[in-house]
Amino acid sequence: MKRYLTIIVLLIAAAFSASAQGNYGFRGSLSDFYSRGESEEPAGHMMFEGVEINGSLQSCMGRLKEQLKFKPSHKDKNEPFMEGNYGKEKVEIRLGTVPGHDLVYMFVVTYPRRNSWATLSTLYESVKMKLTLKYGAPVGTDEKNPPEYLAVFDTPEGDITLSTTEEGYVRIYFQDKINLELARHETYN
Image (cartoon, rainbow, N blue to C red; front, side, top):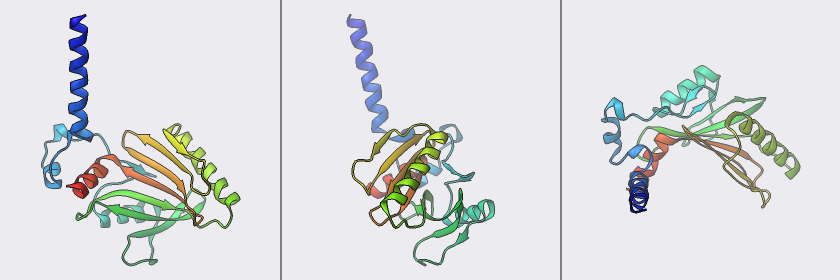
């Protein structure tokens, strides 16, 4: 009995130690992350339609342009937007970068505005079904307060959040786990 108790205590201590270090055991600055050895490198970055969510803003915009035929949007010169087709719809993609660094950690896909709850919820359900087929069932949903619905999908490479807004938009947030951890670290330290 004492032996089993010791094993349980050790397992709990190991779990707390791992969670205190965050994803992939990373602690330190952005430059510390890049100076680590190859053996500690986490496995893979989140992909959006074959485009890796990683690298500088210009390199990500270049890959979106080259691989998916997206074009820079001139909607807002202060925000990095691209326009193109996702599925059968024309969408906008905003690229999120780690604060204070030129490192992309997120793509936000925004569908054109819908003028009614019926068309907004239909689009939401359609996109949710496609994401479920590709990534499995959402790990969480909040669909009790229209017009603001939410579904979260978890993958080894990152999180995908599908949402609707009060203004009539459906958005998908593709967040790379490795670079999101860097963004959190840089924001809160």
